[in-house]
Amino acid sequence: DTQMTQSPSSLSASVGDRVTITCQASQDISNYLNWYQHKPGKAPKLLIYDASNLETGVPSRFSGSGSGTDFTFTISSLQPEDIATYYCQQYANLPPSFGQGTKLEIK
Amino acid sequence: EVQLVESGGGLVQPGRSLRLSCAASGFTFGDYAMHWVRQVPGKGLEWVSGISWNSGSIDYAGSVKGRFTISRDNAKNSLYLQMNSLRVEDMALYYCAKDQYQLMIYSFDLWGQGTLVTVSS
Image (cartoon, rainbow over all chains, first blue to last red; front, side):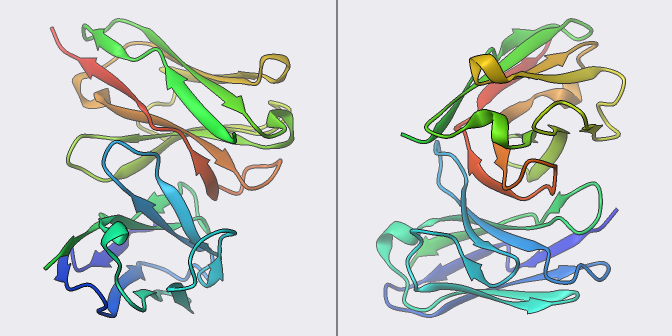
């Protein structure tokens, strides 16, 4: 199985800060990587697909990059409504697998 | 409104069965593959099972193969998960998730809010 190692596991930042989360795959997954936002009690939401494509309706402050085994998710200017847990997920190999999540808090 | 709404969760004893349902609305349900994904409280996400648009292709995680059965009814815009021989380790919040395509590519672009399954004696 492909293991997804996400870091950090938690992050505290101020409104307006640039925030970066990384995800490393245990084997080459090309660009078959998604990023999701999950707020408590809500449905998870797809933000980035195919490593760098912004899902329709998602604010442009969210972005993703990378290919192969190393990926980065960035929020260019943190907003209060961005408080959530973020997950990466690979779908190159079966079974699909998720990172352990990054809990983002406001400082 | 485009949404998925899960139901059927609850408290069940180990070894017993439970059937989850997912009602889809706001999109052409029969055009997409569908999946179940679960999350143990406080833990990460685990893909459980998937089914293609016409039920021609079905897949399970190794941890549930032989115990869980996924199905769909496109006329009713509904997805199901029959869970038999439940174990304590199956206790989780179960999400219904829509695939981006007809065939399973395991990329989930719409999720429900989940239904909680508690397995305890």
